[in-house]
Image 1 (spheres, rainbow, N blue to C red):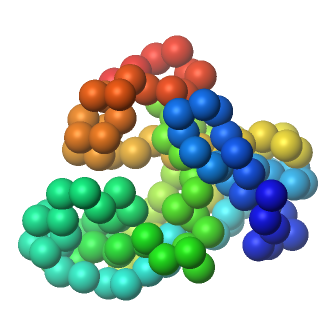
Image 2: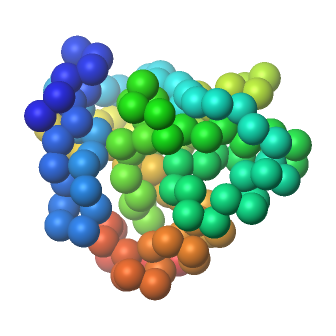
Length: 133
């Protein structure tokens, strides 16, 4: 278990999903969670990086490679019924709570269709939402 921000901790998640990001304190709907950070690379190059799992497209020109360990947001696992969402604000990826999150609850986000189809669907979705893309 590793703590990076007093509001969160990184620990083992559900089987098949690796590590996840969990709330150490309750988080209110609308509250800022954190920024998805990393190296900014051209989207055309990102599209050719087939094995990369931490790419987050900002727009048709730019993508963030969030594979670095300093990117705490990379531990937010997929859910078909997420409790966070990302908003692009002036080229930055800002993650907010879309509903109240209880202390101890895992933070989740809905990965885009392209990522879901490439990485999640072949292995089967491991989220507990019960609804799948």
